[in-house]
Image (cartoon, rainbow, N blue to C red; front, side):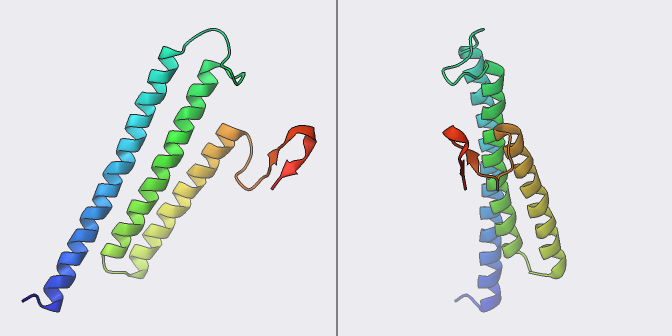
Length: 132
């Protein structure tokens, strides 16, 4: 029969492994996504703009930015799971907070680069009306 300490240790190990698995998933999302973006870029490389009016380079840049955004979100989730798995202290919570702040700032910078606006700004609709 399992005692409480053994069970707690097994649950912590399981959560740690889940966190590492989510980390690996985040890295795979980024790597596979970047390879896919370049694959799409080289397959459709043409001097003419795409159907959306963007150059192939701009489409590549947007695709890579979107992949990085998704990968960062997955990595933040992994950090949260791994922090919950270890003993919660002010130190581990502080490290998690800093990681989340840094990755959130990177996400905002990527949105600014991709869409040309901050995430909290409404999108311009036709006729100059902003959607919030």
